[in-house]
Image 1 (tube, rainbow, N blue to C red):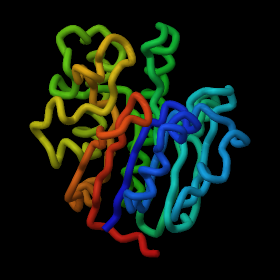
Image 2 (image 1 turned 45 degrees about the vertical axis):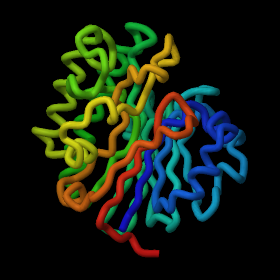
Image 3 (image 1 turned 30 degrees about the horizontal axis):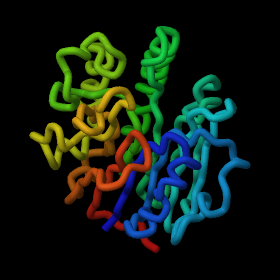
Image 4 (image 1 turned 135 degrees about the vertical axis):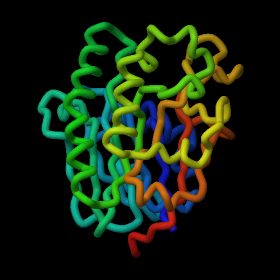
Amino acid sequence: MLRVISANLNGIRSASTKGFFSWLAQQQADVVCVQELKAQAGDINESMRQPEGLRGWFHCAEKKGYSGVGLYARREPDRVVEGIGHAGFDAEGRYLRADWGPLSVISLYLPSGSSSEERQQAKFLFMEEFFPVLQALRAEGREILICGDWNIAHQNIDLKNWKGNQKNSGFLPEERAWLTRVFDEVGWVDVYRRLHPEAGEESYTWWSNRGQAWAKNVGWRIDYQIATPGLAATASRAAIFKEQRFSDHAPLTVDYGFDIGS
């Protein structure tokens, strides 16, 4: 079995103080993908770099306190690749890939466009640049898993207030259509949806800090594990952990019938 966890930490130091690594030590994960580190390499101490039984690799943003992704694993990867080959986005630390034999796992943090029109245009540009990357990954013929915060709710079922959010970043028609192409045209599989096709409110992974979004479960499902069909077909369990809060996102855990060895 291969257990993979994905979690947007909204600051690795903040999540650490809220008990994320204590929780992680009990999860028996083989690979863990984290996003939104909001830290430089020098800010990541040894307990965050090598939590119990795991070793971490990180792609930090050049800008302090911003973005950044990481990947933890029990077994040393054959290789680690940072970035998608776009200088501007790679400087933001949004993509980290690790390979083990026939398997690759990628930690992804797709830009948010909610802060300004400028950032929405940057998000659209990233989507444009990333689509051929997704096509090239599928053409490799490997089993690949892309975990992370995609910052897009795909369908009405994926957020509480879908009617009121159709003109808001994260649920724009163009964003949703792009994600549909990722699935239907390129052939990637939304693993949680494959296992839980009807899940609504229980599927949310992010809640705004405004109002009482968490208390009222006014959430969005924007964190995904998206896999090649062969790997997706082996997924047996998907769970979103909400009993404890480490971030404004909840960790997503999926178990696959795949072995990367020890």
